[in-house]
Length: 276
Length: 335
Image (cartoon, rainbow over all chains, first blue to last red; front, side):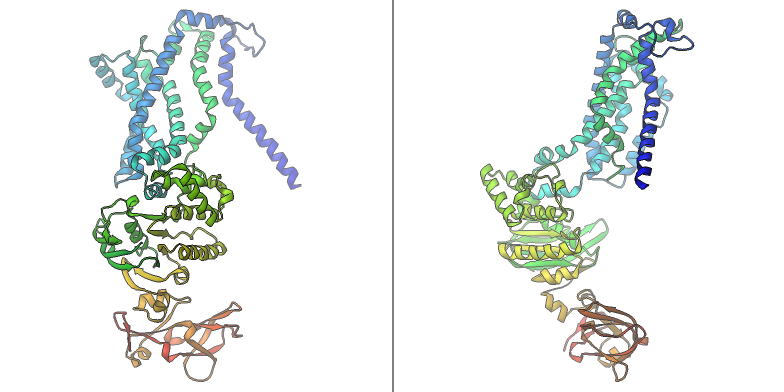
């Protein structure tokens, strides 16, 4: 009896998990399907699910009208650049707070996080004016800078919690074993920190890739990443659902592939510290 | 060689004095145990010797050389941590050989030494495993292997057995003691377990709130405790203390008698009378917790089985030669 009950529970929970997963995935699926429809079919009521006239003309139009690769390159540079700079700043910061905490460490961490609580729109005007004066509007370096600063608190928090999990004893054991600081870093710390660094890097890359507020407001064409590219398809003249879907599919494709191959790292990064 | 001398060693963290001036002379090859209740400063004292903490005052001499400004690795000591502190990403071989690698020894020499150490500790079949694939006892052995392979002047053990279950702890206790005697290397061992201290040590340092209360061989501490603290801390069950009239009659503020030095007689003749509150029958021993009225609760130990039970009246007769006397400030009175 107990065994039957267990089997039934497994079946039910598996079914529920699939259903829930499908619900979450559905908008993405719908977007991909819409990108293969004609504009007319894309907002037809009742909507057709699979049996419609499949076409790739939206993709051709999108590439023709706006240069996908130009925007994709901008996205790569902005997301990659801001992530790398954020890591370079966050590693020593998180390191020192994790390994030589002071009485104020907790306060500093909270203060850092508090900067994320303010809605970005609150500082849009000053930032816009500053960028204008410095000639940073619609420049890649400007976007790298703002995204790096925006994500820095989260990067520091993630690395801090990660580094905190590295037992001090192990570092002390390495010191007793005669490792200099440099060798301690190479042989002990880095190998132990790599999973944490990797998941932080991935998560931040995704956050920066999808960031839309600053990229939309501070770029127009030259430095415009894929978010701006998508937004350009929702225009005052009306929505072009099929083309918008095609552009969105193109925009999320790279990060989706990256996410797919690094699922394990991502899950570990997101749940880190939850369980010992 | 591994002679370690402490001269007036002090350590404070801000306004808190953890170690209030420790003087100690540890001779080469001896096994010294630091014991005391938690928070007494024993681990801090060990970390000061290791160099993992800086002293606030005083000198630490290793073979006559003051090492307070020498980094941990240059002191020629090796340490076994309570958490084992193995490198999780390295194999057993890598863990044991790490210190040698850092010292820049050639690869084949490292291998030879690691394999010799592994053979001593019965770790040969596990050399290529990662720490997470080992049991607690095996991890402990790897940690010890890492310490012995460097042939240090002294081993420092920081409560190394406290994470093991009771049976394994007894076994490892014997192994560590045997290994230390076999290698003849000085060892300093920190524990809060007085049984470990009594069984392993050549000499015991009893620490209490940052002060060395007594330094001596296990039997010296048992037979001639310097003060009330040592008398109460060493020996299990605890020594009985009696104050008041009975103590004054013997010219002391407090007198102490160990449970095993109380003769138990069924109610009747003389001695200290009381009612048994709890009787523990272990087969090999019988422990009686006796409510002796104005004298308070007394513990008595009988070797073997004694068929007495809770509620029975007993008389306890202290062995007059083994009564410890203490003055009002808690120091032992001799003669």
